[in-house]
Length: 200
Image 1 (cartoon, rainbow, N blue to C red):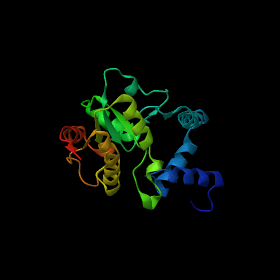
Image 2: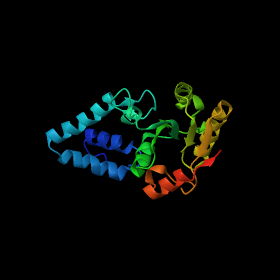
Image 3: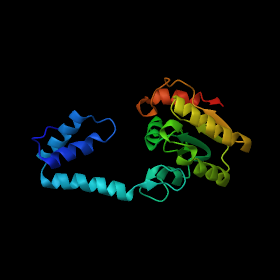
Image 4: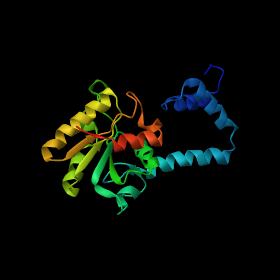
């Protein structure tokens, strides 16, 4: 923002611009919009940010985000705990749940292997997955990482750890476009990819 703008407004725009997918022009629009909101709305917005950061944490089993110790999916006795769908992020859990076709449970890695970006196996929730499998005796792990170089590398790495344990490891069928993002896939594409998963 130009030098003639008030410093707090410039800082606010820079904070918005630091969020993924928001460029400086959008950030400036958001900052100006905040200035047009009444005090109560701004305080409510700020409190929602604080509450989410303070009260939302990882489920002790699947690592999905929840405000409880154990998320609603892991707490649901009707879900099949023998099948674990491994995804990159909590957004991917939401994408699969929209299909209303998958009845297993999930495990969120919170990232993908990318040594060039400093994301090594110890930065992902892989050891939690291994501990969970040994505790629950899961039969199948579905690798539902995105069909990208990092997604494939992560799937192969996890599969390499699980196969010696006698766990069936499958990969989503590529009804999903290569380089695509699960979050933006429609329900039918996700359902077909899930139904046509392949052995790794």
